[in-house]
Length: 348
Image (cartoon, rainbow, N blue to C red; front, side, top):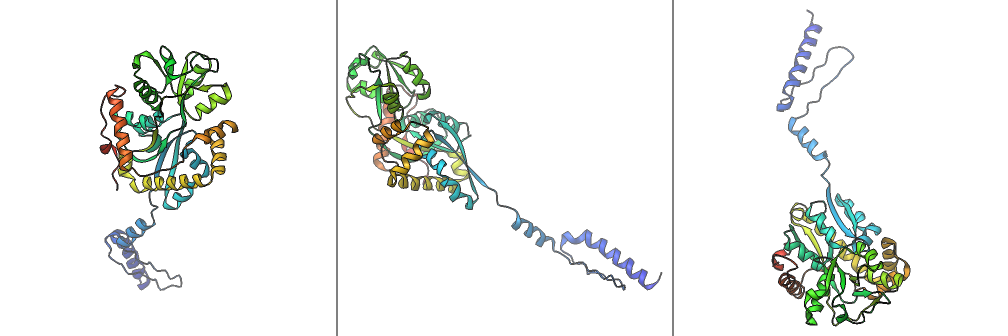
């Protein structure tokens, strides 16, 4: 065996050894045969390779799923694409779950772990908390004082609230319209069993009311405005106002897992609410687009709509919610009392 063959054999053996021990970080020097086709092997540390792979691996994307009601602030923000624009650079993806006609089905998606958060009426939220939903209240919307009512047909003999005795009234079970009706019955000292409650969701209620299968319908805008304009309904005078907040509620497990992303969503929704309050014409156009309602219905809805907002919980709001929670428990609407302070999301 000549000198070149010996050198070539030695180089081959070293290459094999290098392949076997490269992971341990040992370095085997390169070999160059004495011909013109020179080659070299640059050793790479096993640790360096691992570090490089880790640093180049893409960061896992965070997904936040939002359940939303038709025509809500969330629906308008979805249309504007604000969340996607602001959160994409942070590797946060938004998925929309909906649309829904009221808060109850949104809460069902949160309970089923198919949504992380959503917003809607306070009574529905408190009812869900009583029922054991693993969610917490992270923010609220100012009280709604003028966009709820009880509508009847134009030719109805019902002229005042007391005329509802012996009649059938559609309400949403465990929601703001059932709370509205029962609170007013209490105020007027009318036993609650003197008025029959018919439980329906708003989208189911409209056909039943239009066909005269029931006598009256306790509901909120835009349903009130739709009934007034499209079906010549009239509202009966109410003996008092029963204001309701909207609550932003979050699945507790989701908040633990992706707190920063969810709180980022809430912060952007708050900014969007402020922007819409300052730009009512744009707000109304967007609302009409996402709701699909006629312009005249949208106009009347906005005449009674409260300012929007996504606000942190404050003592008065907490006290009001606790009063509502205690009342619906005493009335038998829910089976378990809710301690509102225990239902608030942690601050961090």
